[in-house]
Image (cartoon, rainbow, N blue to C red; front, side, top):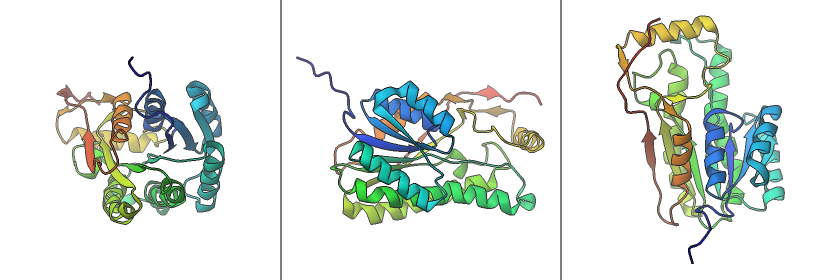
Length: 259
């Protein structure tokens, strides 16, 4: 008789930035694969809606990942609710487009504290729980913009922060391997999300115009569900086997829109 189990049955995963965008797509994919998901983000209302959508295999933990004390409290609550943790997806990240010569201290600290600090704080808080899992993994979400100059323009700070996450992941691999914890970098290319929500219109226009100067064609956009599937796949390996780095990106030839 065929088994009705799914690949990630009974495993528990924490996903940061899971109230929308890629984090939501990742949470959906993990639940669809049989996992249980701790949803972390700042927007309590949006998290409640995601929890209602995903059902009993999810639980919302409103958290500011730039606050180490709040992160510690969130992971203590995760341990109390689920009793275990098998994986962490450091997905939360944000960007504020601007020219390097015009970047403000506020824009700089916001991006670095979220995109780098959040990875560190969440990994630190998750580590005691992950050590108790038989096959724990951390997946750090990067971006193709960390390596490609042909992604959207004027995101130098964001792209640099994602490059830092990739180098940080190298150190994490060396440190956490002794605890039996694998570390993967997953780098998405252009994806249809609300990533640009909250950007100042003037800077969004300037960034788009600069992007258009890089050429008339681009790779197009992909549905965020494929990023979610790729993350779930990274968790579906036996102990001692790990994907170090994977990049998923659109593979079309599209004409950039007139602007």
